[in-house]
Length: 152
Image 1: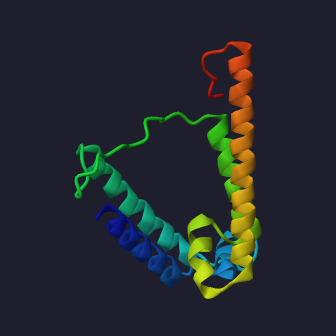
Image 2: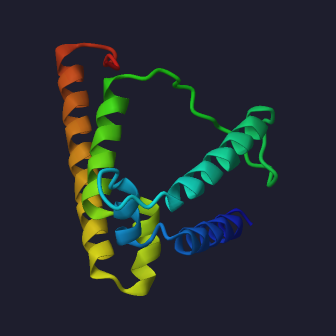
């Protein structure tokens, strides 16, 4: 049931991405082009997502289990640190250059777009590099005898 409900949620999310225009890089880049021919229509999509996300997180915060009985595990971190800011910058730069973010790129694979496939390959490569750097950093910390890594 868990896998089925995840598949249905993903399907609904993907359909929403297609209907809202988030899978069209030209539309996304038009939204991000504040100095040119700005297309504000995606602001409504984002506002709707923020409202739905806010309500969902408020509900989830009041419950120990989901509707399907799975444990609710919300992020504990609330601090804005250097890693969050740098990650956000990298994400935003990639979004601005490609016109894709991960969800819409995956949904765009179904239309056979080579740009989406190229973006996903680059995204996976970036994730692999990040993972390698994180492991290298953790190994260096263990060798130096430090118990934990500061988050700044």
